[in-house]
Length: 89
Image (cartoon, rainbow, N blue to C red; front, side, top):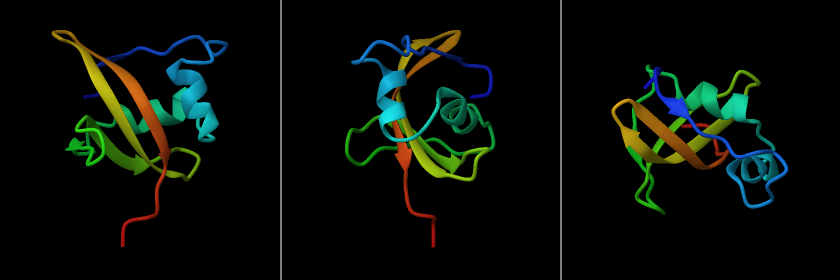
């Protein structure tokens, strides 16, 4: 999924995805690093049914990212949430 377009809302939009991930202590760059990593498998979020990925950010945080697909061709996605999760055992 390394070639997807990722849509982020403006940081000053209190209801936007940029503000939402910031509430979880993350930046769009950290989220993009996991989201766009083609080596990470895509799963399905147990809570929302959305596609998701688990991975390490460049800053050493282990996170989950869940998103909606905006368009299939070319692939465009909108991150819904991202937050730190415990390391895998």
